[in-house]
Length: 168
Image (tube, rainbow, N blue to C red; front, side, top):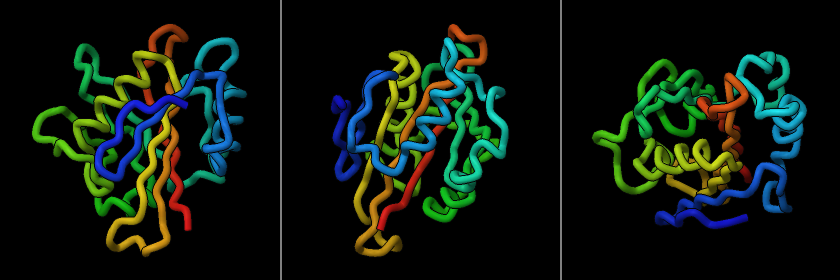
C-alpha cells in the first residue's frame, strides 16, 4: 500500500489492482465480488445486480464522472448508512471542486476527496481511506472505505464504487 496523503486524521492510500495486504480486513467480500466481475477488464456498474451487494446495503456510494470535468462527479448512490454517518444524502447531486472544504471531514466531501477519487480513476488503482473517531460516532469507532474503479466501456474508468465500514 502506498500513501497518497494524510489530511488531519484522514488517511488516503492506494495499491495496484492485483495487490492487497492485510490492512483491508473486512473488505474481502466486496473485493472478491468486484474482481469476479473484472473479466478481463474492470467491471462496469451494469455488471452488478443489487443482490450482489446484500452484505453492503447502506454502505455503498457510487460516483459517475462528468465528461471533461476532472473534479466533478454525479452521485448515483449515497447509501443510507453513509447518510447516517455524514448527516446528508448526496444521491442525485453533483459534486464539484467549487466551494469544497480544504480539510477532509466525514460530514462533507472535501477537495482532497475529489482529487483522490480522480487519482484512483486516472491511475487505475484501488483506493483506501480511514479516519478515527469523530464526535457523535462514539469514542471507539473508526470509518474506513475502499474505492474501486469501474469502466462502462472496458477502456475508460468512468465510475467509482465506494464501500464503507464503521468499525467498533
